[in-house]
Image (tube, rainbow, N blue to C red; front, side, top):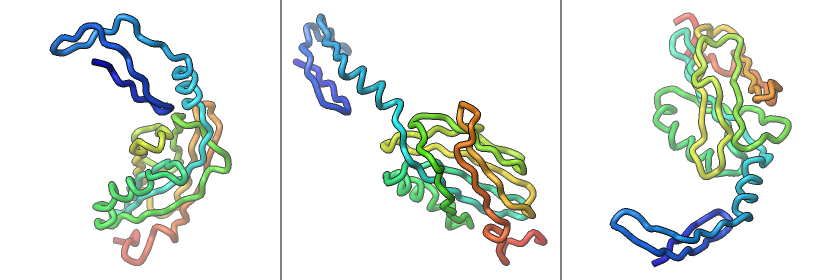
Length: 178
């Protein structure tokens, strides 16, 4: 019997010396320095991403979810599938401007909006392509203003800033007079 280790950079087999019903014992496990180096390098990768906002206006409240997606990945399709039910309930998708520079994979970013009453969670993480992207839910009670947003990195630098004008999210069917 052997144990198969599957890593991003390849596979390896290890000899098993003792097997019980629930465990396998390896007397001389192999340690691969290459595996450690590749894992460390993958944590510090610069990537380009897109910002997508799903939003709905309900009476005088704007409810939105902001996603940070890797560019050219399957994450966008995963988010569209996840949001499909919400779009049929009045949510619309807005593809916002992308950050001007690349961002570090697995980094955390805080979403800021001066008019929001709630942002949950306070930070989102830029996740690898094979995982479901995280999102921030933002609630604004005032629908009579432009929606200003920015993402702040852990180093307190603004990495992205955009604005959704009031004309883009207030339509005849979602007026503030209702």
